[in-house]
Length: 333
Image (cartoon, rainbow, N blue to C red; front, side, top):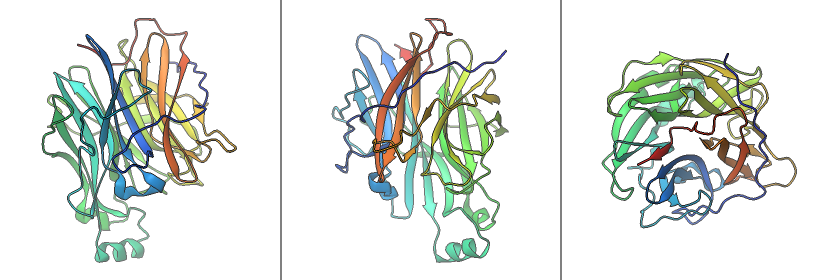
């Protein structure tokens, strides 16, 4: 029987200090891997998002020895820059496989005047003309390959009001690259869909498969992070907002579990909610990430107050797991 683990997470008292290329220290959309060898290091992919200004959403990378204190360590951020003001690079997800780092991200192209008029005429929610998933590869986190486009949605079909665009890819590797992603109309969307693909090399991907998920009523799935565990289970961390709100009013983080990555069951009770009052994470949560090891669930999560976006850290023991069970984003080399 598939059961979600019982977690008892508390909101972080204060956020982490995350250095950003723009100097704001405001950051969102974390994704983490932990590499264990002669020395242990955590690698964090994220984007700045100062005061909700999406023009600064450019994938960046930091490293840490403990997952708490972060530095660039000669990495030049952002590692990916937009070619023009019409392109937005966001939603990073990092994977380590075969001695290389694969950094996936979403590239969105803004529509021109004609697109905006058509969108208004058809009451289209999507404000981007096209959305694609791209990847860059590095051996040392310092020198990165040129972006390679691997998936695309939108284009001329974006003029049609029922076209969903790709957001928030989440990739794992267990000998095969596996990707989950959302297709949505936009930030006020109430009917997103979840999909899955596989790849042998992380570049060429197979056919799209629809993912089915049991999810609490009245909540809208927006961003996800998926990790496979060494016991064969898949866990999905989901940032969701109420149907009456939008994507910058995410109140809850949920945890879903699966045996095959295609059929999911979500725990009804969220594992973390906004911290009401004057806390740094009192307004909204957002895409977050996790590691499982030594019977501990470690969570790095996005929170905001007054459009000041930060990343916090919290953890919980998992009594139901075997001590040797770990998520595959904890890598021994």
